[in-house]
Image (cartoon, rainbow, N blue to C red; front, side, top):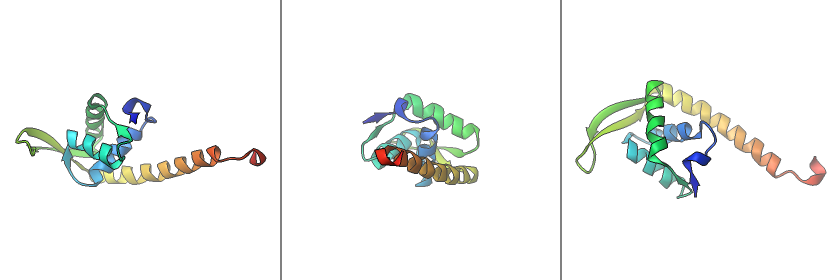
Length: 113
């Protein structure tokens, strides 16, 4: 299982944006959504998640709204803003290119160098 500190810089923000593109949720819901969609390969730390949510909110990439959680507690719910949708599209494209580039390097055979 990978921990938050093992992620490449910028990856956490991209995954938060992706998680919120699936629908609005509160902070802990974002954490659970990322862990579930990673099929248990990622374990996020709340100490990394909440500062990232604040950063994305201050950049206008996510929109907050206070509401009540399923456990009847006051919680801040987040949704992706229009700017967040645009950022996610760009990040997803760059991520796909990065994965392909690294895979190409890692799959190289001695006669290809």
